[in-house]
Image (cartoon, rainbow, N blue to C red; front, side, top):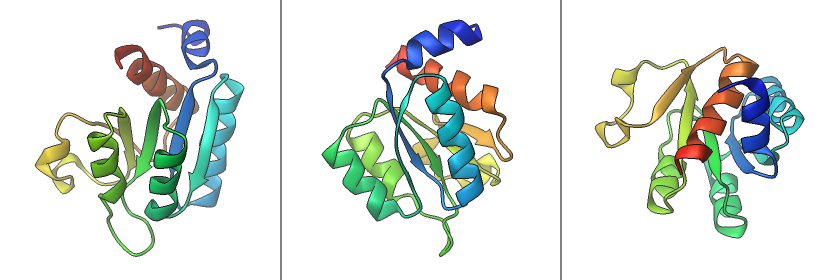
Length: 127
């Protein structure tokens, strides 16, 4: 897909971001908003993101695994239950992610803006 196609797909899409690194979170927010998406969050804590998920169902999500207090899979499980497509944004390798998430895309940090936008557009298009 081209950048213009991605922008059309992301227009008015709601993207939930769970990321505790302020700079990465705001960078992701900026690039997604520039592509037309509405960002829910970014949330630094899984509990905040779960509240957003139940309050304003996103079209897709970007999810960090390591959140200050260690790895957390609460939001990914809630996203699977709600049938919301998502991708992990992490420095962890695939073996560190439970088998239940084997089909979830993994974007390795540092994430390029083009990669984040293309991944979210692809998830929305599939969903």
